[in-house]
Length: 139
Image 1 (cartoon, rainbow, N blue to C red):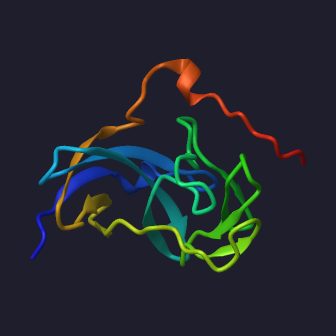
Image 2 (cartoon, one colour):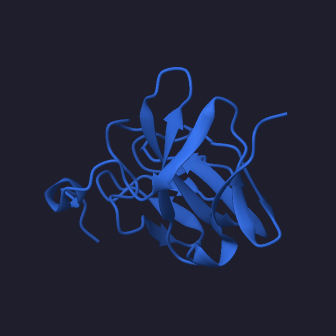
């Protein structure tokens, strides 16, 4: 059974955005960003990158854009179902976000992904310039 580490209280996961956190891969000590999003009646966890170009973060530090229960990549306009992670619109149709295992219990979101440890809430980068969007999509 995977270790269980508290990430955040369920009340801290926004209804219409995402909660960004950083995990550390146990074997390599590599940090990766992940997001929590309300999905259906629960909370889903996804690694924080678009499937179109995987160096592009969905949540740049202030919450990913959401539209109709879908996570929106502001750089490419791709839309991902919050529950399944599947791309439903944009340049990578049918692609699926990479999940990170989480569970909820007693008002807390727990990391249960084997091989990862919770590092901290928020992004890896803390430089404000690194968190700005360079979107080329207009709405």
